[in-house]
Length: 124
Image (tube, rainbow, N blue to C red; front, side):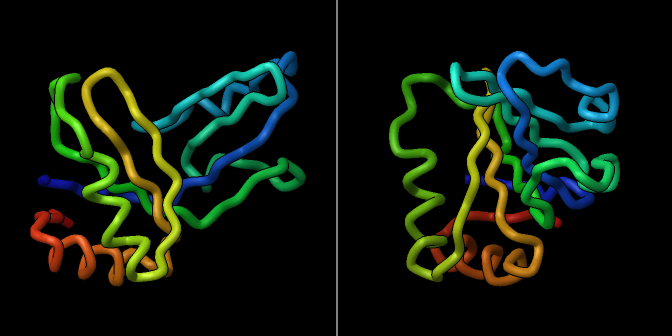
Protein backbone atom coordinates (compact mmCIF):
# COMPACT_ATOMS: atom_id res chain seq x y z
CA UNK A 1 0.00 0.00 0.00
CA UNK A 2 1.01 3.61 -0.54
CA UNK A 3 0.37 6.03 2.31
CA UNK A 4 0.75 9.78 2.74
CA UNK A 5 1.19 11.62 6.03
CA UNK A 6 -1.38 14.40 6.37
CA UNK A 7 0.28 17.52 7.85
CA UNK A 8 -0.63 18.59 11.38
CA UNK A 9 -1.65 16.92 14.61
CA UNK A 10 -5.10 15.59 15.31
CA UNK A 11 -7.36 14.92 18.29
CA UNK A 12 -10.14 12.42 18.91
CA UNK A 13 -12.89 14.20 20.84
CA UNK A 14 -15.90 12.75 22.65
CA UNK A 15 -19.34 14.32 22.85
CA UNK A 16 -22.71 13.11 24.09
CA UNK A 17 -24.71 11.65 21.18
CA UNK A 18 -27.37 14.41 21.23
CA UNK A 19 -24.93 17.27 21.86
CA UNK A 20 -24.65 19.83 19.08
CA UNK A 21 -21.19 19.88 17.56
CA UNK A 22 -19.26 23.15 17.67
CA UNK A 23 -18.15 24.87 14.47
CA UNK A 24 -14.45 24.27 15.22
CA UNK A 25 -15.02 20.51 14.78
CA UNK A 26 -15.48 21.08 11.04
CA UNK A 27 -12.39 23.23 10.45
CA UNK A 28 -9.39 22.12 8.42
CA UNK A 29 -8.90 19.75 5.50
CA UNK A 30 -9.64 16.58 7.47
CA UNK A 31 -12.29 15.81 10.06
CA UNK A 32 -14.52 12.83 10.76
CA UNK A 33 -17.71 12.49 12.79
CA UNK A 34 -19.09 9.18 14.05
CA UNK A 35 -22.29 8.89 16.08
CA UNK A 36 -23.53 5.89 18.03
CA UNK A 37 -26.24 5.52 20.65
CA UNK A 38 -23.59 6.06 23.35
CA UNK A 39 -21.40 8.84 21.96
CA UNK A 40 -20.38 11.11 19.14
CA UNK A 41 -16.70 11.10 18.22
CA UNK A 42 -14.97 13.82 16.25
CA UNK A 43 -11.51 13.53 14.74
CA UNK A 44 -10.17 16.96 13.86
CA UNK A 45 -7.11 19.18 13.91
CA UNK A 46 -5.73 19.39 17.43
CA UNK A 47 -5.11 23.12 17.26
CA UNK A 48 -8.85 23.84 16.85
CA UNK A 49 -9.89 22.00 20.05
CA UNK A 50 -10.44 24.38 22.99
CA UNK A 51 -9.38 23.49 26.52
CA UNK A 52 -11.95 21.58 28.54
CA UNK A 53 -13.09 19.32 25.69
CA UNK A 54 -12.82 15.60 26.41
CA UNK A 55 -10.27 14.40 23.89
CA UNK A 56 -7.15 12.40 23.22
CA UNK A 57 -4.73 14.69 21.39
CA UNK A 58 -1.34 14.16 19.76
CA UNK A 59 -2.22 11.98 16.77
CA UNK A 60 -0.56 11.94 13.35
CA UNK A 61 -2.65 10.85 10.36
CA UNK A 62 -1.56 8.53 7.56
CA UNK A 63 -3.84 8.32 4.52
CA UNK A 64 -3.94 5.15 2.44
CA UNK A 65 -3.79 6.33 -1.16
CA UNK A 66 -7.02 5.35 -2.84
CA UNK A 67 -9.64 4.97 -3.90
CA UNK A 68 -9.75 1.42 -2.65
CA UNK A 69 -12.09 -1.15 -4.12
CA UNK A 70 -14.62 -2.50 -1.63
CA UNK A 71 -13.71 -6.06 -2.68
CA UNK A 72 -10.17 -5.68 -1.27
CA UNK A 73 -9.58 -7.71 1.86
CA UNK A 74 -7.03 -7.31 4.61
CA UNK A 75 -6.14 -3.67 3.93
CA UNK A 76 -6.29 -2.57 7.57
CA UNK A 77 -4.83 -5.89 8.74
CA UNK A 78 -1.79 -5.47 6.46
CA UNK A 79 -1.15 -2.08 8.04
CA UNK A 80 -2.18 -2.80 11.62
CA UNK A 81 -0.16 -6.02 11.99
CA UNK A 82 3.33 -4.51 11.49
CA UNK A 83 2.38 -1.58 13.72
CA UNK A 84 1.14 -3.91 16.44
CA UNK A 85 4.36 -5.93 16.19
CA UNK A 86 6.26 -2.65 16.70
CA UNK A 87 4.12 -1.84 19.75
CA UNK A 88 2.38 1.10 18.05
CA UNK A 89 -1.32 1.61 18.75
CA UNK A 90 -3.64 2.90 16.03
CA UNK A 91 -6.98 4.60 15.63
CA UNK A 92 -8.52 3.86 12.23
CA UNK A 93 -11.02 5.95 10.27
CA UNK A 94 -12.52 4.72 7.02
CA UNK A 95 -14.32 6.62 4.27
CA UNK A 96 -15.98 5.56 1.03
CA UNK A 97 -12.69 5.93 -0.89
CA UNK A 98 -9.98 4.93 1.56
CA UNK A 99 -8.68 4.35 5.09
CA UNK A 100 -6.81 6.60 7.48
CA UNK A 101 -4.53 5.40 10.26
CA UNK A 102 -3.92 7.60 13.25
CA UNK A 103 -0.77 6.92 15.28
CA UNK A 104 0.54 8.96 18.17
CA UNK A 105 2.73 11.74 16.78
CA UNK A 106 5.69 10.61 18.89
CA UNK A 107 5.43 7.18 17.18
CA UNK A 108 5.22 8.42 13.58
CA UNK A 109 8.87 7.75 12.72
CA UNK A 110 8.69 4.24 14.16
CA UNK A 111 5.38 3.70 12.33
CA UNK A 112 6.91 4.75 9.02
CA UNK A 113 9.81 2.37 9.67
CA UNK A 114 7.53 -0.56 10.54
CA UNK A 115 5.28 0.04 7.53
CA UNK A 116 8.24 0.44 5.17
CA UNK A 117 9.82 -2.75 6.49
CA UNK A 118 6.52 -4.52 5.81
CA UNK A 119 6.69 -3.42 2.15
CA UNK A 120 4.49 -0.33 2.22
CA UNK A 121 5.50 3.11 0.94
CA UNK A 122 4.96 6.19 3.12
CA UNK A 123 5.27 9.65 1.59
CA UNK A 124 6.02 12.49 3.96
